[in-house]
Image (cartoon, rainbow, N blue to C red; front, side, top):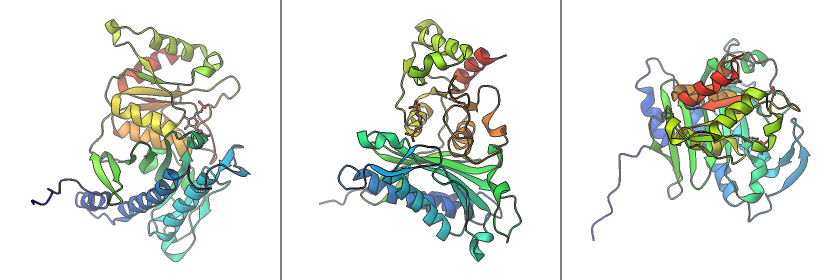
Length: 339
Ligand code: AHG
């Protein structure tokens, strides 16, 4: 019997991040190490997400988070796993989490020497857990501005998205994937459950310049501004003659919605509404990381008026209207939104 062929072309996340170091003179490996730490937390979260229907980890934890939303037990688990790996790693001086009121300063000898702080939404789309729909983790890595050797502080977290060194997400879907961007590119890794490793499956991801998918919550249609409504109507009126017809796809789990559009081409929108002019999504945990990924992949991201990455945050949990996607679709949206 001949032994099965092993495909040595497939790189694991660890192998890939180590190889990337060769291209960067004077690299210390801190960012690579941090990405591997996040990959480890993601694998642990994935195990629990996969058995959410089986064990008593499913359901409300009975608490309400700082955004006033019900906290699920898995949110807490994911938050603790991410905080734990980053606290014990060598690259992170502190974290900010959608689940926590304030940022956390690790303040120990190794952490204080670290170059980065990390902001994350540990389990986005968690209202979908109960119904077995894809959910995700989103993270943003900022190069700190405070003095090395000292504990990090608020200024490290309240930086524009342009200061991100990396950003990414994990989608817990029909398979589990980790996608992350550095300035060098966007790469996607699929978890091979048989060996417990993220393997490079989507190298050098680029946003298709055009797409046919638009993703928006139609239930809020009459609460959107007139220019946004007009753009949505234009999407519905597309024909084969002008790039259509378009398809509407909205899971209500941003990681899954944006991931699909990144691969297939499309636009994702969470506009402000009359009730919530700033929309629902958080600038630091959701908009900035996806805006960074979009731009590195050749797409765009705005709040309807400004480039997301240029917005100077004023507080940790601030929200922003959010539009992101394929370049040409975003340009058409921008024409509708022009004052
Ligand atoms: P949550 O984590 O509370 O489930 O929120 C998910 C986020 C985001 O992932 C998704 O795109 C959006 O909220 C959906 O909100 P609407 O239900 O208002 O459309």
